[in-house]
Length: 168
Picture 1 (cartoon, rainbow, N blue to C red):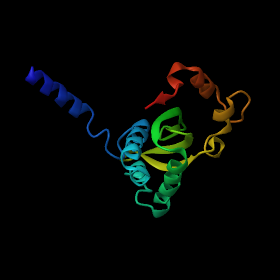
Picture 2: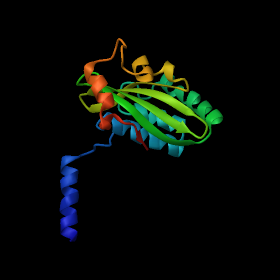
Picture 3: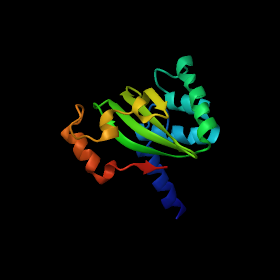
């Protein structure tokens, strides 16, 4: 039994080396691990984790965004959960995730852009705000019907069960 368990772990390690390391994880994993950091240790570490392994890592202007996140906590209370509302694969190397962070008294909306560079996926850009229209495209806010940026693929994807939001 022990040998079988060891073999299974060896296979997992061989086929999934470092998938949660910065710059290697898939875009959804980057947001999930960053959310766990936000919930556990706060906005400063969240921003550091979100930017880890990317070109903006350590950028003082980007790290300053943590003060805005801290003020959301002041007004909205404790962070409870988050949802990835939509994931848009812009190109083979660029993916945008639209999120909602659920606090006790209200939501904070987000947009995270991930890029797949030579060392894997990393965040290149993010924006969070308590007003959804400041960070989400109108097609996401008001549906795809008739909007300029609505494609057949996106419209079909929004109707698919897999496009439903996931609460963490």
